[in-house]
Image 1: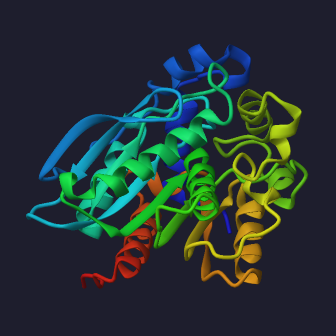
Image 2: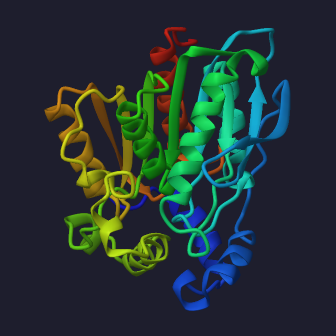
Image 3: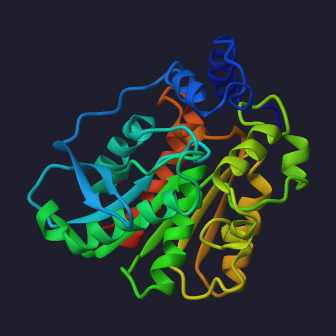
Length: 312
């Protein structure tokens, strides 16, 4: 089907800014330009507070969101996108607020280090450190460590998948669910969706190739499953997953491939395909109906994993 008209309107707003591709201006300017894109405000939540948590090499900034009530609440660690190169806590602030309210959970948003200044494994280790902190300190943030999930979009989808692998391989923390939304998971740039959606839908094939080059600066990292989850030989024993991608996303094929590999490994994995949608559609404003539907599906999956039911 054609691009959803509401999605196209949002893409047109971004195109009208006339910003050059990130690979033409480099990481620093790309981050400045990314802040010029339309940014939505999220709903009010009961509380928001910034913390720093101990990481592998550095302290990692996180932002914690709370719903109303005394808890203990389930915990969702959410990881922003941006190709491992751009993105901040503000990138997913509106989404974290919606997730917090909709899933009635504590949301811990991770401000991981960015490439190329801090290439792999910095972002993966920072994200894993945030998950370990959320589990170990659940009581202090009104959380329930026995109901801990991870999620993220694009680069954050990669990192959510990586964290699930790391937690399995390193003996915890226990994770009950992973939401992997339009994720960058593999290094095959000749998939059907990469070729079909190479240009014209916000995220391009050439930009993705550049992002990966910034993140993976050593040849051996290109075969590390914590960097490239589709490289993992064994996907068994991972938490149930929701994987989501749109028709006009270059990353569609690898998202579906990862879902199929999870299912083949005995993991409960749902692949959700959105016709007419581009990359990052779930994070578009509430005026985009398909974005509201996608956010609702994520919330429903998270609530079901937490065992808290779904509101009508």
